[in-house]
Image 1 (cartoon, one colour):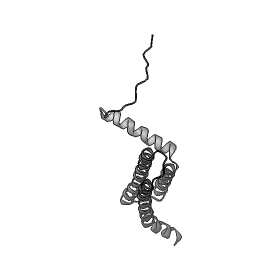
Image 2: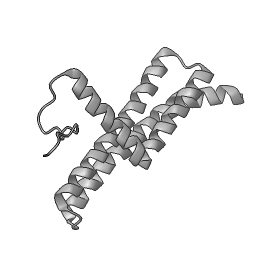
Image 3: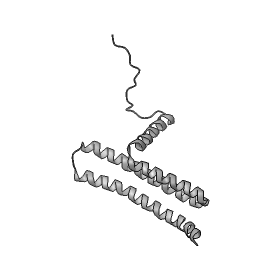
Amino acid sequence: MLMASNVKPPQTGKNHNFWQSFKHAWTGLRFTFQHEQNFKFHVLIGFLVIVFSAVIQVNTTEWLWLIGVIFIVLIAELWNTAVEYIVDLLVAKQYDPLAKHIKDVSAAIVLVAAALAVIVGLIIFVPYFWQLLF
């Protein structure tokens, strides 16, 4: 006689409520943090920027720009990770030049977002450094 298993089958349908969606999103965020070195790096840099900004006491507008670009970079990294997994799933470890272009363009999204963050950081932080030096 077979005993009923308490293990739920994997979900294949739509989420039924906000909390179910939130749980899946949180799982994806945790998975990305645990498995993607670049995401960890961007989180660390974002954390350091927040700490430094608190120390030098940036103004509200500067906080908004800094938090905005930090999240843009994290969103870009999450997007890049999702695209890489989708492409890898579709090509099944076979080299495909189009798959390479897709992954390169996806990585370029992160590069452009990071460039924006650096530009915003320079605009905000250089005057503070300048003030400290002179």
